[in-house]
Image 1 (cartoon, helix red, strand yellow):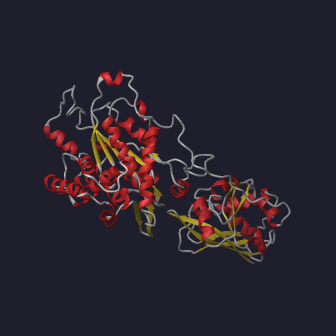
Image 2: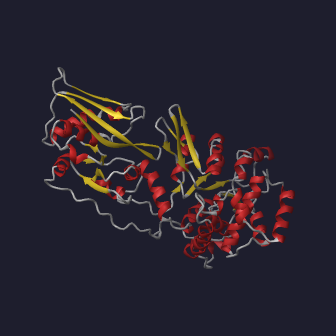
Image 3: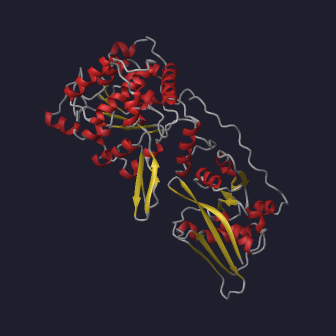
Length: 511
């Protein structure tokens, strides 16, 4: 007898419907349980979990011959999410559940030996795939039902145990579909970020970070140790706008596959802030592994990636940032194919100006030789620096400012301006796919939306020649000018907008 159950495989962020074909031969001589279709060890071990779960659920497991084929057979199968579908297939071919009850349904879940159904990662893309492929119902672990319910148009059945599922399929004790509560965005509670009002001095840096937040521009902060670079980077989180519904689902999908969703929070409601150590490997930063997994760049999608002491990171790791910064995606290629992850993040780098850290400091004298300084600063290549819109020096804070009680602007008031500027950008780019902020603009959009007044265009032309800006740097100055104009609530770019954007270009590595 043959039964076909549907499950789901996840490759990258995409889901693929898997036919779990279970064949039962009660007349076979020697009992066996074979799984084919490129299963990994976790899938092969499901034989023992399924057998124990069925027996401990007071159901019958005839000790005969079973063959389970996971179709398509050329697609690698990973994870323990096939346990529930295999168990349902075994019960179906042994006449313990009705075949009619499992049509137009998708089964996902890991089985414990006592028959309970456990959490699996990647539920959100699985539910999305089920809805997209026309399934009416998806059976998921009870703990994962809130996450699956984020996808509309499909009935989510939360399953606690295998025995409960059998009773439901016989309509003896029906399981009520999960009714999602309204998932709303929340403001960042106090204490989750450093308020700009608590950062003494550095007003010019705060202004630069406000511009960066308004247009999602990349930032490099350079200054001596202890001047507040890390503190300012963590303060930037507090002025970023809230995630839109579409952005929240994008981020949640990534964290679901990475199995990093906070407990009790099925929907990511705040922009990610990732701060890996400078010893992080290239695979840790970009992503990789035998089974490609998202790295820090992908986990920072629609949020902030902060690299402290960036110059201390291996050059190969830093250079790997160039492609995702330009293309907003990460592509991981393996022998069996390529997987693409979204990586539209805002990069913030913090560096010291030299090995000792005090080159250019107003108080302490630098002990490094010119050759050491040049070699140290040269670890950040010209092409990488060209992809950073805002270069800002963070000097030592004077004692008077450090101990003063003069009130400073709060993050909440700065965030209001940032959100108004983002609103202008959303309205401007409505109807354009993949463009939400000024930094997302391509050449065609730059020519269309970065309209300059004649005096502003003249200043930019003169600056391009004198500063020897590359074509990429020229376009980035235009994008930055557009953001400054948005903060100023101006439709066209004026001369002072261009002048402010130009001051954020680096004094070195112009090409």
